[in-house]
Image (tube, rainbow, N blue to C red):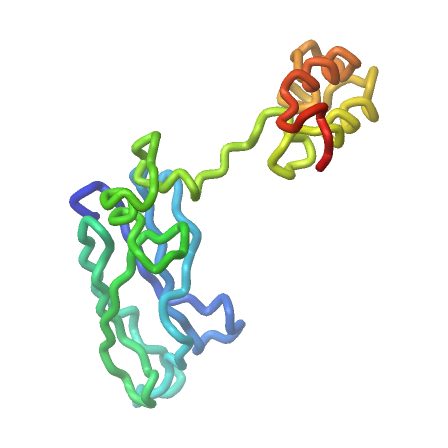
Length: 190
């Protein structure tokens, strides 16, 4: 665990190869005590875990060490990149915006905003726009048309996004209310 409460994790994973003996080192992190985790990111090249083992059918062990720092983690791990078992070192860090810099440093140095102080750059968080029924990032005529196409039908459940007024029915009133939220002039599509 890092001094700023981030949990870092690394592990060997065979998901990409489909073979038991070809692994990559993966990294993920959590800012909320492990309730949610970042996307799993491969941080090494693939390697054969049976090379250099005197018992060729056995894999090398999961020999890795991780030391978490405020802005990332230092990792020492075993791999067989050069045809024998050796120890390798690398730095891993949260980088949701994939700019090659730690998100922690991006926020501290003003390269990224973090309005809700959750350690995740605002640019990486996707807050769905209420009323954006087609998921294209705006509210326009296409969203209103989705409501009108289902007019006078019951909702699919209590969280149906087409039921703007939450009365249990998708109707013309929902379309009128959504018109007030259009993000483009005259609810234009372009």
